[in-house]
Each structure stands twice: as C-alpha cells, then as structure tokens.
Length: 352
Image (cartoon, rainbow, N blue to C red; front, side):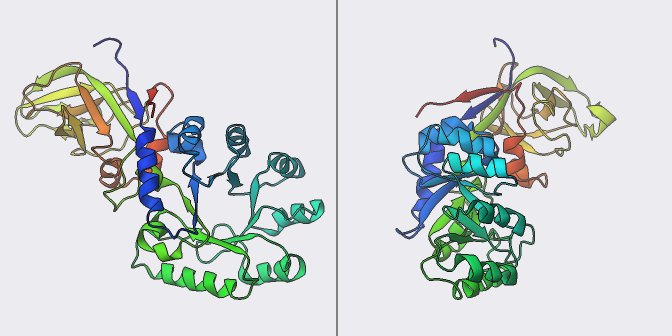
C-alpha cells in the first residue's frame, strides 16, 4: 500500500448505460433532460456533460453558476429549474440562452418587465406543495399574457417511486385537466425518474431525469450505481468476547472477533449514524460495520474473511454493490450519500 487514502471512482460509461435504459422506455417524441444539479450529484459536472452530450437533449440545474458553466461546453437546452430572482440574474440567464422556470408572481414580473417570453417553463403546483403556481393564479396570467405564447407547462410528482400512491393519480389528473384549458401546442413535462419507470405513458414532451442516470433509484436493479466509494484497511485486531469497539462502546462482541479499521469516516462523507450491521464489501465478500463511524475511520467485522489484510480495499458502494443498499438500510437516500463525499477523498474519473 502506498499513501492511504479513500477513493471515489466515477464511471461515465455506466451513466451512459443508465440513460440508454431509461430512454428506451420513452416515446420517440419525448425529449430527455438530464438533471445534473449539485455537481452532477457529485459526479463532476463538466466531465459528465462532455461524456453524455451526444445522447441527451438538455440539462437541468438549480444554480446559475452551474448553468453558465454548462453553456461553455454545450449548445443543448439548459433549464434553470428554480428560475431567477433579480433583474441582473434574468439578464445573465438571457445572455447565456438559458431556459427559465417561472413558479411565482415575483418571477413572472421579471418576464413582464423585460418583455421576454421565450424559453419559459411555467411550474404548476399539483400536490407537491413546495413551488409552483396554483391553477387559478396561473390561468389569470395565461389568459392575460400567455394565450398566444409558446412555453412549457411543468409540474413535479411527489411519490412517483411508489406507483400505488394515490397522489400520482391525483397529480396526473390535475395536470391533464389544466392542459385541456390551454393552447394544445404548449409543451408538457411532468416525468422524473420514478415516472419514467412506473408511468412511461406520462413521458409527454420532456422528461427530467436525475437520480436514475446515476443509479440511485431504489426499486430498479437494472440501473447501476455509477460511482465506487472505497478505502483501505489500515489495521486489523482481534478482540475477545465482551470487549467493545468505538465511541460509546456501542458495539459489543458476543464472541471472539477480528475487526478491521478502514481509513474512511464522517470527515470523508460517511454519515456518522450508520448502523451496526450495515453491509460493506472486502475482497468481494460481504462484511458488516461494527461500531460507530468516527471522523477518520470505520470499524468492520471481518471475522469470517481469513485472507483479509492491511491494504485491502473496503467498498461502501459500487456498480456491483448498489448505493441503495447502504442508503435504505440506514434510512438515508442515495442523493445524500452521493453529494456528501468530501474533497479530501481522491476522485478518479474514468475515461470512456
């Protein structure tokens, strides 16, 4: 082993594979927007854009800075998904040919003040109750200002990953009902990853897919995790029955054990509250976390791995061991795990 360090290995070939899988579910007329906010969910935004630009129709981000950085390397559509909130940002967005989401009257006032109605997406609240116009408010704006304009009507599903949830039916009905009151030429968008997988008939004109392209969607085994978080073992010790491991002595040995200390902790991005028994992989054999995650290290029970040595890699998640396993067993979401990996973890971006 050379210098001990945790590694985050990013595989764009898997991102491309996931996109192709999802696109195969869509109607030919549906366009595919890759949602790559928060540095492509930790996958390095500029690299991902270069490696998927030929197979997507556009990108969605939240921060203006990220949108502008994409514009420097792609001519595709770029949607600023929460819009802008000032005249200066509105002008900068227009100067960079960005599409804007308009979700409240303050944002629409910027549109009116600048008499600029191109490349707009109007967000409707159909039940998520976070952002978006209520129907009556939007219809007033539509009747006065938009009836002869081209735009995209959008909404956001709150439970598309649970197809039996009644809110899906309610939101689809609300959205479809509103669309019937508008010019039939407007474009429509409501589908996220869960919708593409569970309700592909609702793909409409644009789908907006984020977590699925990185393999973080729980409930689908075809989508692979596109990153590997791994770190080397830096110590192995034997403990006796009754001895405890780690802070607060949370983990107590019920028999003689062999414990590996792995060079990765919450300062690297692992959640501090990961439970004992959470599965990781060493030499492609499942092992279990034993003891509280510390700032710099995590302890793992390797009693059943006889050939385990200092320097061997411990994988927390990888294409072969889904990030969803770690997330779901600890009441986490894959999004959180992807974006929380800290800068001191060495990032390795594989070439296509």
